[in-house]
Amino acid sequence: MKLQKIMLDGGFSCPNRDGRVGQGGCTFCLCESFNPAYCRRHSTITEQMEAGKKFFEGKYPRMQYLAYFQAYSSTYAPLEVLRRRYDEALAVEDVVGLVVATRPDCIDDDVLALLVSIRERGYSVAIELGCETFHDRTLARVNRGHTSRQSVEAIRLCHKYGLPVTVHLMFGLPGEDRDDILAEADILNALPVASLKIHQLQILRGTRMAREWEERKEDFLSFTLDTYAQLVADFVQRLRGGIRIERFASSAPKDMLISPRFGVKQSVVEARIRALMDKS
Image 1 (cartoon, helix red, strand yellow):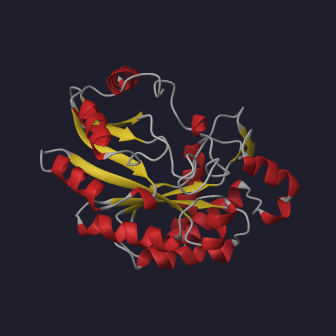
Image 2 (spheres, helix red, strand yellow):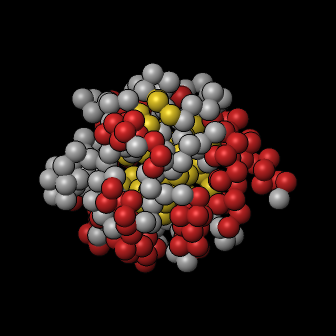
């Protein structure tokens, strides 16, 4: 039976948006660039789930679903709020699990105990952790609002509770070069990471990153399809066995994307990366 993630906007915020650790959010962030049409915060969780199910119906004869709280920091709210929103999603027919995307500084014992209690009810539970980079100078530059140490501690804490962690890394952040990026493979190798999602930095219209890119292009890696594919292939080959790669690249709507514009579908990018890995 096919498992399909349904993306949800739970109406959360982020601590670098509401003033707890900063204002304005990450300089690269534009949530509208990855939220599907059915994922809208003015709709209830149930409405989003049902709309997502309808969006995917007919793709496979029989499907089950994972409620994927993706937008913003989906553990950043009081516990009772989290419990209500997670439970609303899990109450929808054919939903068998929960995937929660969040930040390292929004993970603690109370949140993880809540997620473990959901798993003990028979649901699958996984965490996607937006680390983006393990270089503190970059985290500060993009207004991320947390440190690499917090990322490491969050990964280890999730592992302590027996919850699998998918780490998100972004390649091409300002001030980082190829060696900086490849060095992060060694950091991941020493951590209890279950899987990895790799994203190329996408310069999106209307973001602070777009203004910075216009003013200081020399601070950014200039990716072509070939140079990006080679970087990812080299990075993956440095990883220890046992880390599953869930994503090699990201995509954004053409009208929002400034750079890099590979001009091919995401599946082609992935195929190019796999071909390079097969050659090595």
